[in-house]
Image (tube, rainbow, N blue to C red; front, side, top):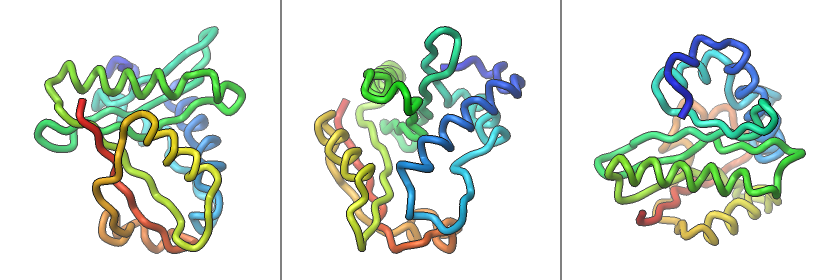
Length: 171
């Protein structure tokens, strides 16, 4: 995990936010109305200050990131998972998920979860890839709802109807 003091590093927060936004622009293309980014430097700095962000670096550059947190008694969660597009397929995402699971296990969490937004009216290649990949990692869909139920403030920003899936696995 990044040290909480790293929240003051504006360059780092901007670098992580830029990475997430580049990755999510492809991973969620067509789901959101407009061209708003997934996150910003201020939000990332807040998550770093909360002790929830880990990064992967190669040659001093951030090439991946993940948010790790506790969401319920005994349940950890990872999100904001991103690997630099030029490094995708190199195992960065897998190692970040492994890190998140190990961290939660060390904190006494018995289960791990992730959230995935998927369009209802079309097949999205990135979402299909992620669903299959998460399944290979041992995650199973345990909840299916709508964004309106899970994050009502985000619903008006969608360009298409989506299902909101929660995957979980035992650690």
